[in-house]
Image 1: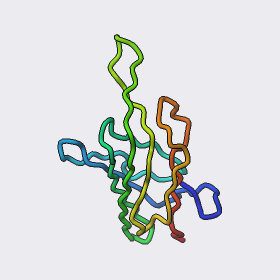
Image 2: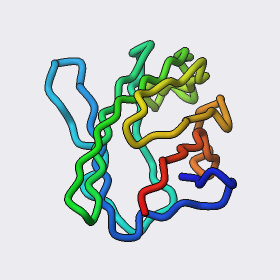
Image 3: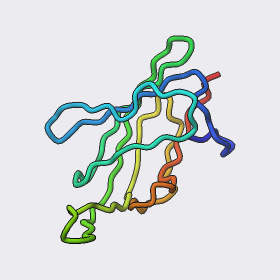
Length: 129
């Protein structure tokens, strides 16, 4: 998460929850009421061409903000060995969102593979204080 000036934005006391819908139609929680963080990890689907993420931020004043994020991606099967199941690498094609608390969202690294150290998105939240 970033501030407009490019520095890290921290959820000091606000809480952030993110959920997504599974292929069977049920919701699944990816992050539940996280706080005190500047970065977080999210799982993406193996084969859906577009993942829809529902973000809820609760601030210290009791205000609730909800945004939806859509991540369009391609899915490339990746084969390592006959002893392992197939895995998927992804190329992020686009990202868009609603803008209740999200100011903007950008792709930082479009290639998703085994390297979990890369930041794939920069999420810019609106001023909250």
